[in-house]
Amino acid sequence: MIRVLIADDHALVRDGLRHILSGAEGFEVAGEAADGAGAIRLARECPASVLLLDLSMPGRNGLELIRQIKEEQPGLKVLVLTMHAEEQYAKRAFAAGASGYLTKESATKELVAAVAKVAAGGVYVSLAMAEQFARGLTGAADRLPHERLSDREFDVFRRLVDGQPLGDIARELSVSSKTVSTYKMRILEKMQLQSDAALVRYAIRHKLFEEGI
Image (cartoon, rainbow, N blue to C red; front, side):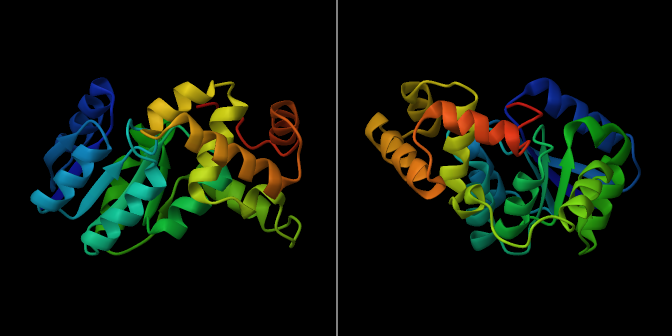
């Protein structure tokens, strides 16, 4: 029996994932969480093989969550389940310690196979993401400016491009507006850009956030 934990802030998504897994032989949903703090508690208190983790829950950056969970519970496999279909998020998730990356639009068809493979010690990438990885192999060898950003800086970059005010970003990340302003300054410096508009143009040019938040 493969015991699975689900961490997603949308109840309907959790219900759907539970329904898919409950209908497949050999799977048990052992616990659920609706935010980052809950995901940490769940990983600590509820033994399981795989954690299905949404990258965009309130309170914590999803990539930071992966790192903390893998540090505290190295035997727990993390399968990222997210709306983010961009290659950059997948790369960062694997670097943080994830064993799989599955977009929510692919979950209905691929979830059971993905959980089984990850639980068995394998690595799973959704078919759509695998195509993006393959295309990326033919790209430039030099690191692009956005690849120099830390995970938290990249998250703030995405939110700025989406047009979120600094105060909203601070509230969602549970930090001060001054801290977000510092992140923004670092982002502009590292990417050698001068304004929010330049960040948006850069993101469009490199097709970074085509799927939205």
